[in-house]
Length: 146
Image (cartoon, rainbow, N blue to C red; front, side, top):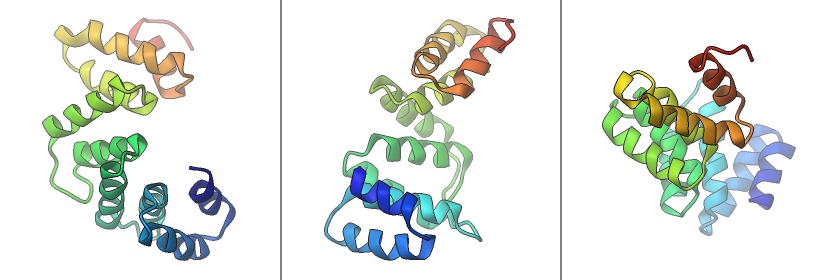
């Protein structure tokens, strides 16, 4: 992800968008992922465009993009809300080791007492990768201070 990532972080949003569009035009899936971030962070935010870029990047094998597709779908951003489809995608990403997906899946599962042990397993997996949200939620779920 280095080239597209460097462009995203080192350029102004307008310049990054121009350069990332060039890379996306030649099939760079990481560039598509960062174009999704740019659309999501734009003012005004463009959730529809962001989701479209994340879907392209996810189709190209970028797991973090698949996580963002799941998150947008979970919250109904840029698309209709579909929690079941989102949870399926989160689980796929979580199983591949994406800490953000492990955290989000654990957070979702904690809503259901019968899923508590699975939720804690996913939160522990994310926390072991240093995910701060998972660390805090795990401590809260276990009744500890962070």
